[in-house]
Length: 232
Image (cartoon, rainbow, N blue to C red; front, side, top):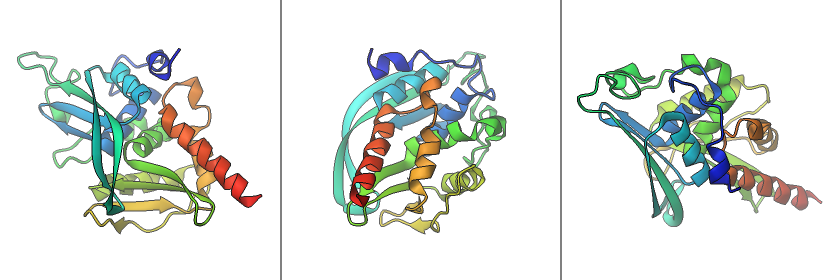
């Protein structure tokens, strides 16, 4: 069975706004790489299995494309990757509206586009995993033989929230300051010394729920293996 096929076999709440691990993962992705308006929700991922999970949680339509974009830290570098876009439209003329709400303000988003995540406070790891997969990067740094974990977003607010979640997580994970990118957005990184323990904790036991992007976990595992081999 492929990752995409097994991804839909997960426990999902009857309400995608309920306090639940799956809804926390979904809204982490939306905050990391999505957009919410009265017309609907759109969220983008480059992992097919993760896209299937998000669709299982909240419904909607999936589209697949291949895109080329500038690398966030250095706009002189481009990368081509698979892209899966989940679109959840508001039902015009339907009292149910968007996810059973009359508009975007019925979702965990305020009038300024800020996210309210109080309902998911018991599922910080899934929420943070969704954020990382939505706007984060994992890499092996060949120059230092270390693993790098960073978060990049056009808006500083989701990154400030991610920093709060990391500061409160059970693993000691110091972070660098929030800085501007060359493309006009913002980013921060977990200290390299703390990245292996933080990444391992973030994906620990994720197989039990299915709430993860297999390609992102594989990237973490390969990076950890490369770092271990570098030290030998």
